[in-house]
Length: 580
Image (cartoon, rainbow, N blue to C red; front, side, top):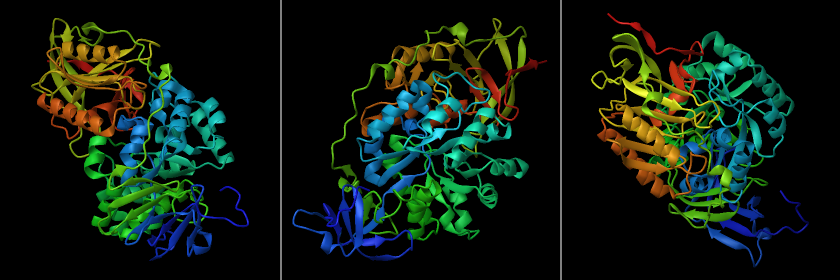
């Protein structure tokens, strides 16, 4: 905070509210004096108030610290930083922790710096985690920019850097030399190591914890999360737009009676339509309360607990002197609804609407021309064989665990020497096109569970490398969809009979847009509806599709290198041999 003079004066006072003190758990009447965007004093602030002080009336409101999302891939919202701020600020989220890893693989450190600079012009704070290594995929897929030890040496000293982010379990257990050195560098810089260890347990979990991982957001069960906490890894409970784990993992508090002060919340991956329907972290807090968590405890998990995990509680997480003046006004706690949002001491949202005008910056050309591959033809996708019948491995989407892919065997008949999608068996083509024009790789395998009966769906935003991903029942439609994405420098698309049914342009890095959240939400709904008209029965077709390239999710994935066995961490052949 700027130097305090002998006669400080508040430029703003939030008056008449009931303070939710997240340090003590108390509720009591208190005014809040603000100077220069920071909290000057809490309680009786009359001596700090003068004739020019702006008064924000808070009578009949509870005063809550601004919410903090402990782990979010902001770009997966498909919104630019400015538009993401417009989406979540009215729901009370004033800070997020993000690696900005999706713009990094497309545009490098310049892209990250541009996005951080953009955030500084909005009410939203981005606390940045230096990605452990990019790409996260094993074996490494093709990206525009790799994040290596060289980048850690430069960026771990950035003022925005709060730790090493998304430290994938496999990097640690295979003792990846660059990741280990980055972790040691972080230890010297006193930065926490944040994990990514889905379904970890037993000896691998112990070794992972021994490496110094501080927190993890990837638990698929309460028992898994408890094992991590017992091993000293702090739990971040995830409730994303598709991965609904709060009801399961909140049982550590409601069933196992574990002290709540070790827990934080995150949403990881969200999209506009979901947030506009349900809310953001305020929705997560309400869910926790509905599951039996005391409202004040739920608020602590969305504020101070997260700040303490990242060691930024001197800046955010509480309504206390010296912290940023991020304050939410709510008229009740048991059924929490944020009525007004103050960020940096300024009223920025009221009753679900922004009260300040924020606009995206003019985009530099390098962010608009990131898809550099050539257009494709059907032979680039077709799987050739010399057998009339072939046993194949198809990635079967799990019916009970989001994104998890299991092994399914099927027998396909060849046609003119090629294996084609078989809609009767729900064995579809899934292809990845390397978009950076570095090696021209094109990979095709099989996927089940999407249920497409015709057409194709495709996307140029696909973590963790953002190569072009496409699923189809018709190869010609797949080619058409992919080429339209290349032609338009990014987007998500539904195609049938070589015609565009729905299309969402994503011109910034091929992954995000400056369109308003409401516009994007409407387009998202139409994309999913169109995919369902093709036969897809999944709850969120595009969200399920874009995560097929993540090798940290068991048991199979696909990258531009091909079908990946996520257990052996090797590229494998989807063709298992001739069938009788």
